Image (cartoon, rainbow, N blue to C red; front, side, top):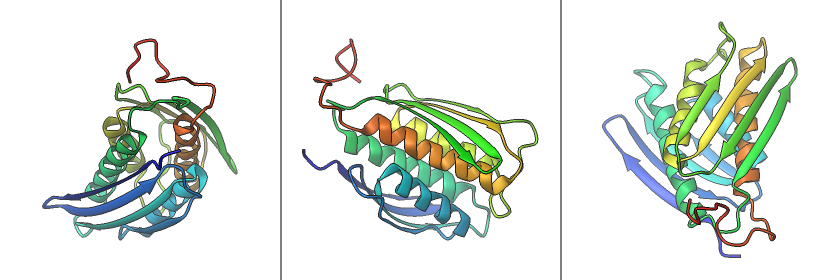
Length: 196
């Protein structure tokens, strides 16, 4: 099996990002974004997706965390799309229910080449102490748009902001892991269109 690895750098007036991902890794991560809670979430993403992830971000976090988190999602999505190549032999779909103590999240993925994010959470869902919950959605949107994937995220219930964010990141990792996996029974591209 050829290695499914991609690297990318992105530099704007707001962020400088260097990222490398191996879709067929063991979950090793070296992550420095300047936002400790986001580092924690991406480390969980790497571990539970079995993606090797090397990431360095220098962003304008003195302004706020938005640019760093959104731009990281952009580059992550781009790299995953590049690493997938033609998508021959992949499962294409992935689904995960992820419990985190009192929280339950569901994440469903289709690597369809049609970007869409459906993100649903109860009104008043709390933020983690060190990261606004709205930025969890922005991250997912950036990944979906640049991976060109259809991603549905639903927080079914939860009270603790840390647990809610963690359930979403772990659920996204598990669903993407399943969708990206090679399946020996899949011949060619898993679409009747014969293209994704």
